[in-house]
Image 1 (spheres, rainbow, N blue to C red):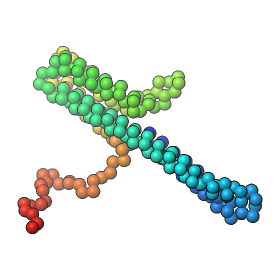
Image 2: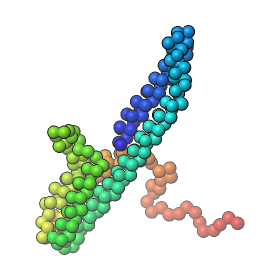
Image 3: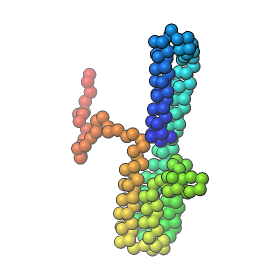
Image 4: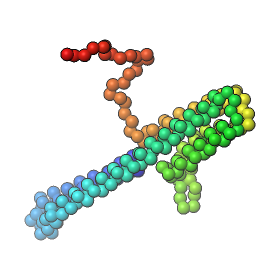
Length: 202
């Protein structure tokens, strides 16, 4: 479950609960009306059941969200490993066709495994839709430019740059789903060492 869908469901649940509270308050303030008085008594008697259902539903929503994030983390690790394999191939002194097809197979699997995390964008019963992260295919198209038997180092250097560019495009959007925050105590200084010195308080 994406963050957008989760937030949309939470807004609906909160709106329904606030509606019940407002309706209950309105009925309480107008308890001289028999119908409103009965409505207030009904809401009061069923409030525990309503709260229990809401809590159970929200727990299910958060559980589905956590399962989605776990799948997303696994997919991201696979993307990173695949990028590493592609860049490793581009820096090999003399890659052969076996290395090429092994790396290409890993990339192909990575592309197809995305479908267990995200559906195609705009997919319907009649339309295939668009692949959700096209830069993965850009990586494939760049890699396909190389000759499996013997690719020159110059060609591999160019492909290296295209793969890096595509990967950075994926990272910029893919990781946004995780709500990643800045560290509370970052180390921004290059070549930093420990601030503590040897010794112990006795």
